[in-house]
Length: 598
Ligand code: DON
Image 1 (spheres, rainbow, N blue to C red):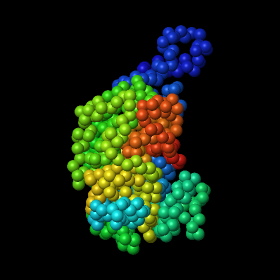
Image 2 (image 1 turned 90 degrees about the horizontal axis):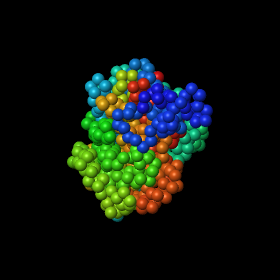
Image 3 (image 1 turned 45 degrees about the vertical axis):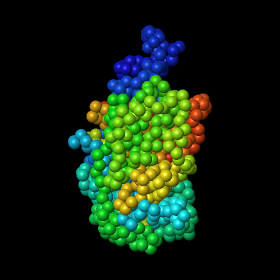
């Protein structure tokens, strides 16, 4: 709609129908507020930004002209913004934020974990995926996590030195910097070093999450030394948390680059810790670790290009698969939170997660039918079998064992710089604080990513995700992930940068952000806040956040869904790029995040 008309209608709304300024005589059809923000119509040519500052929106995003950072922790966002202002590009900022979060969000930010980065380079007009997922140590074997009776030993798999995959984060950040960085490496590591040295304010959420991990950490003196006071007492909100050993490690990384981690003093400390505790990671594992540049997966959805993470993450493949299935129906007309829309989404999600269990794994070890899974033709056949009036029981799709979910912590951040380069990073230790193990003397928390393998094919992992042979444990192999850093393009321009934590819910959280922006034309703040749903095939339940109308829940129940209300899902950090500038929003589902720009 022409802007002037929109403005006129806003004026009308302001005055209200009974107090029209006397000079204006407007035909009733035009005074209809629906014109301010059309509902139920999908028009791929209408720019996304036309919905900003609609008088219908209850919440509005952050606006900035040139550059923007959205992350889950405010100090880290500030670090990234400073780098952008100093003339660093989006990758420089991403490297600095990656290191900063390792200090300020120790639950998920990390040096001892791994993740995925998407980089859109405006000069090359190309997006590349940097895979810095952990690898299984060379000593890992298929049945490593089975006990004498053939059952999964969950403690070994999740809470021991054998739970740790060879970390990829430092190599990934270094590779990104080597390929795209502009500022010196040291300048990107130092802000994190200073934060570790000077200490950070303990906010309530950090204090709470430390209490929750305390029992795990009591087994590891090096962890207790850092994350609890000398007498073992927990940090209280308002205290300062200093991480001196981590500062020393960051100093070595600032000086010597990634080598300090993979071959130098840090590697030696890490391996010594492994050897003292029956861990598997050797000096060779660290030396041989490589971050890998991969080609992203690409999809096309209602006139937009979707670029996302390829295997060993399942995220991009299934995001595109679900979008392809959903393209069958006019979701905009059906409405964002209607039972009709949510039913279609749930049915599509189930099919994708069932495929995930069968086909996805490390592409360097198994052949994955990516082209087939992301094809329109396959989606069409799947959509044709979705009953619009009845939920399909998960057991009809494939057998499985319902399992409870466990909560974890991962984190995502999105960055756009003044040249339009865009970076989306999701990285993790897996659980909050990973294995809970800190490398003695190095201050580095280690992941427990080995739980993302199928320790026993067919037995669900901590997120209830079932996977099979394709994701069996093997030396040097990368465990299957759900992390879904994603870029959306329109006519060759980035229009959305997004991603989320949330374990198995990551894919569906990102999906809903994309649907809310593209189909439902929500501004990015509203797209973030809208209640989320999730179905992962097994367990056979439609998980929803609080906030769906009871009528909708009843209708979904009537279609045969087992609807369960549980904790919130995901924590998106998103940026929409529009001709006027950047609109960003940090998900308030967890405290402490910040989107800021300049
Ligand atoms: O790679 C994965 O899919 C999981 N390790 C991610 C874990 C996670 O997101 C926990 N978060 N909230």
